[in-house]
Image 1 (tube, rainbow, N blue to C red):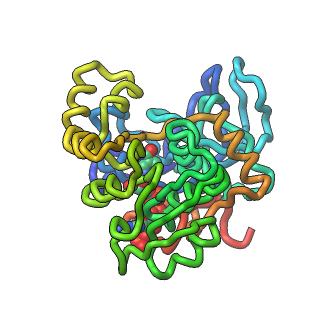
Image 2 (tube, rainbow, N blue to C red):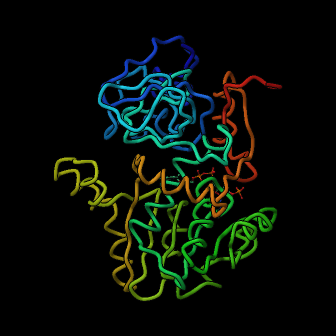
Length: 337
Ligand SMILES: NC(=O)c1ccc[n+]([C@@H]2O[C@H](COP(=O)([O-])OP(=O)(O)OC[C@H]3O[C@@H](n4cnc5c(N)ncnc54)[C@H](OP(=O)(O)O)[C@@H]3O)[C@@H](O)[C@H]2O)c1
């Protein structure tokens, strides 16, 4: 089958290849991929940024978001049948959406929201699961709380704004001038144009901040929290909780605690909290999210769609920061069909 594989780590490490179709385990479903979403994580994995913790055996197929049709069901799988339209963020070490077929653990898969096309559905899993895991699982956001979502026009930010609003929060976001209308339409109550204003000078008393930029942005984010507030970063630095999530030896927990010592100390001094979050595959959360898409509470924001053959171009487009807003998807369906 046709696929895009990482052969060697680095900027030029991904290429088109002909690879064997995946073998289907007892707990897997085989999915014929209709569309795949592009995420910054694809580039990071291709570059080997996670090679110490995600030990992929090269060559491996890249791609963290898929939507498609079930063509085979493992002997131990219940709840899916051949012909079902599904979507998934396959778990780490079993990714591979940039291919004609992918075998996915059925626990990571959910029925595609009926109201979305397969292309739209491919834009959803990774960012929607991240939003859920930040707002619902980790921060337990309640109606009336104040949530600051950085980079609101991005694939992640555009989803987090919508879910935070659905949960009843007052939502602030940072975005550039041309994205203001979009982020307001997604539910942002307060928009700070990061090209003109410093958010930390105009916002205060927040219960939660999602940081997806890191560095100085994260440090400043701590100052807009109310006492006891929580800053969650999805770009780091990692903390011991992440090592625990990975099931890594305790020494790695110590290393990660060291990496985040400065920001945790700064947070403590301000009377607030800092946590790192790395999202996880989860089919049952995708089912709950699917219901929110079908009821119109959430909608995917798609910047552009590329044909599957141009997957590397689609990755480059995202990597070069050329998206105007939302997600980039690659589609197996040739133009005009
Ligand atoms: N740890 C995890 O589980 C996890 C999960 C999802 C995402 N992430 C990470 O989160 C980051 C964002 O992901 P994404 O999918 O949303 O990427 P994306 O779609 O490429 O979006 C990035 C956004 O950042 C905006 N931006 C750039 N500089 C900004 C600034 N100074 N202030 C406010 N916004 C700014 C860009 O807007 P402009 O158009 O103005 O440039 C763009 O909308 C990536 O680093 C990704 O790896 C981590």
